[in-house]
Image (cartoon, rainbow, N blue to C red):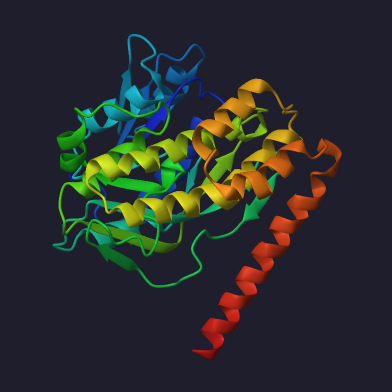
Length: 335
């Protein structure tokens, strides 16, 4: 077995059918479908998730369905998928994500070579349920596959914050599965960073041209006043890389790259959904950024800015994104 499509789910009766249906359609275009398996790990759902999955099974779709006796948490369920998987590689697919019709065939062709990848990153589009449309097309602006060789080679990110953009090497994941997590909820990032650190010649394959559509539901974590906390947890994970043997300069670079603009966007996003400045928020921020001039000069003023003015930095981000895309277009056109 080459590839396991692992679906971690909890109370997913409203969205898991979309994911499975997209997989079924994509499998019809695969020349060697026997190389792929579908595995659903139900984290003791309280709704009709089991019935939805069984409907597909009864209609001939080959799905391995497992239901945990109790909810073992997000991280535990991700680990459970890898332990039960038969594929050399495991692609985590979130509930509601839709696989592109040609994605599995393209992916199998990439994985059937003799290379032994530590992990694979996939390009994707983003569908916003609130707007009922795809709001972002393509995460990567390059068109050719990229292989990053070497533990400290971070020319591009070697993991995807979106869990569904990650495919991992099962054996390497199991090799580091004994390690304790630094934080909860970022299981895939911590495991992948540990996997990459195992060998100095590790290989990360990055595949452009979207393989799936990421689903942003109406009431996702990004609509919560405390969504900024996920950014802080991410920074803690990056800082822990130093204990995994990564070069200090790489860790500092990644922390700066992931925390600066991401921190501002997290503040704007949280404030737009009702976050109010409090002692806890300041304590959370100071714990990580008290020695960072960027926090005091840029982030703190943004924290103090009235919610009604959040449209200013929001539009600023949009302008920066447009300028960045334009500069890349000009660079590619010239060279």
